[in-house]
Image 1: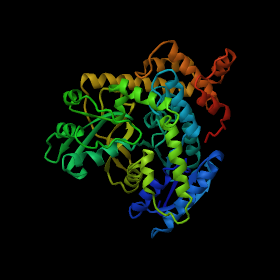
Image 2: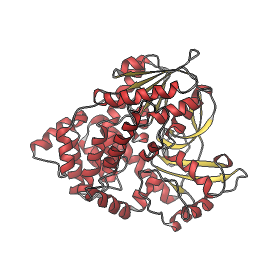
Image 3: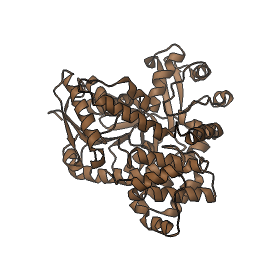
Image 4: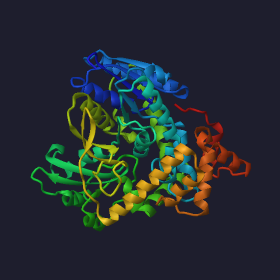
Length: 468
């Protein structure tokens, strides 16, 4: 790496890319980048060009001479890479909209990384990430893979478990947002507090201490009911029951609202689903993205616009770029990551991927021991992790029975005939991205299974195959 660092971003045409560039520019003194390659697919060619030109303008406006390369050839980009970041979405935002609308058409949660939608995002993403890993084994065997592709925890687990690739760290901006927002609630700064996280991606809890070792979790819990609680833009703010949080003396991740306040979250989602002027979160994001790309086209724009924070990815670069800089410079910075458990959370197996506080250095992530969770949280966590393991295996094998098992065990999917119907419709809706399920999909189509939701049905008809 003495000649400078080569970074490859797969899904480089994403609206998040300027956030990533900002983070790299900020850390150039400790992470001397030589070149950046942004990779996308044919369907993302126009966005890649727009974002790539903006990324180059951002570097040109900095004091650093860094070349941004754009390509649709993943293998060309990967050769001799030092770090590979992944932020792609198989099927683009239209796939997300189908993941949301089909479950909601049957009165169940339709969400990007939770419930039926999260399961199908994993089904589409895991085979692609494993093909990327195979290319990396050949073209950049010493590179680190830093994954932001959702569902980040399951994808990272599959990379290790099925891809046999250990040099991987999974990331999410949700813990970063908590650590940026919560200290203000009790008149502190982030460096005046010590955070400890444990769980899995989008399903973790954390506790907080001050520098004298005093637990201040309960103080923050009290303040969560008085001020802005720093939720990501994509989560509807239904307050947790205060008595529940005080009993556990842990702060749940924002996504726990789908589990702890299921009725209220579902009611809100159905309201938006049924309102043609609002639509699901994916439909809203599609509009936000269109506005962002119009901004990115401005030849005078050479910095990240404020509107990007509406996309739900605030502080993305603080997680991704700090992790890469910490590996490169052996900084041993503490970051919340998805990594192999190795005993940090004894309620799960040592080889399970968990989302925990960890020290990041040249050897990767060294998780900080959290200890066992209380009975309620332990029960939730074990159910959710084993659901994820079923999803991952089904994504690799195409085992329909195992997919049905994952649906049955998932707390956001009421079990029964309706759940099976939603599974079947989602398989048909995403058939171009699910070759592992092709035999079952053909059987379902022969039986006359069709998609109930009109918008999802039309999107499926118009779909263009866009697998990285």
